[in-house]
Length: 337
Image (spheres, rainbow, N blue to C red):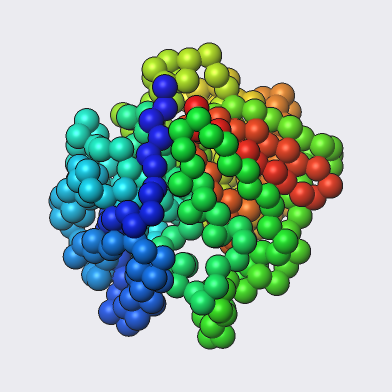
């Protein structure tokens, strides 16, 4: 059984930085993002950590955890979102009181995905892998990114469908601001092994592979117990995005996941676009995808809308999903059951 939070109109949104905060010189960007949320009718409760950044973190782990715990336990807050990702979210995981978390959405990606996956695995509460708050500061929002609100507002028992984007951003260009924030210049093409039509069904789990792999072997990465308690007899669709690990490290990580049992009972794998997919001695990301697909005998799709080359599909950890990839296009339906 999965618990699904619900984002309603005029909800209170808690802003906190359990990983990195925003340095002073970028406070204006955060203020613009907050103003855009307020324009949409949300009530913003802003923690102290979001305005600070020192030595790769917003604040000491105890301070970050205290602020996060307060918001997680506050019934009046319907959504918690950080300004962005960071580096050292893992420091707060053991300081969270998981038993006292009230139903609410937690939204983010990159380093934040370690928190998202830990919460879902520990509690059975769905979490949302998608846009960062600071990327919502634009004058307009692209059609893919803006789906975050529709997804988080879906009622339990309902379904929501998202489609692959038309174009994606190859690299960040902060010198030339865009009304969309992103510079969507490259045609989006979702790919599969052998260019075959791919379909898969199962419960979504995943995140930034750079950091969620650090949960393997810890109390916060117990996939087997999650399956037995919350999704008995069901399969998993894993979605991954790669921030900065090379192809050999990606392969090592996937083998480790397989050996640790994470990939047992999987019905498919999804990999986001990544600028980090630079071949090592001719060993490409496509080689990695082919090998893991052959080992597990399951379909693999890649270069999907997930990760550090936006825009992003909003994936819900714990939701029941159906994925279709054909002729370079993708369709993802998530059911809150």
